[in-house]
Image (cartoon, rainbow, N blue to C red; front, side, top):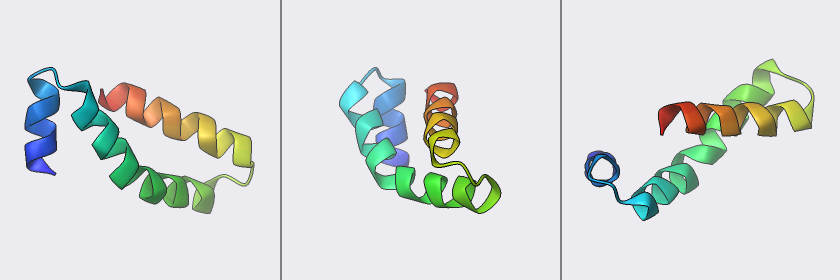
Length: 53
């Protein structure tokens, strides 16, 4: 993961996709435990990754 983050910081957008693929399911599970609406979970998970980027 650290390597992927370093690559993102160097401008590698594909590395960010890797991070989203790896962490996305965990983020969605966490959000789904707190938010019942599936669409809100998807919207919030996108916002999480936009903020992280």
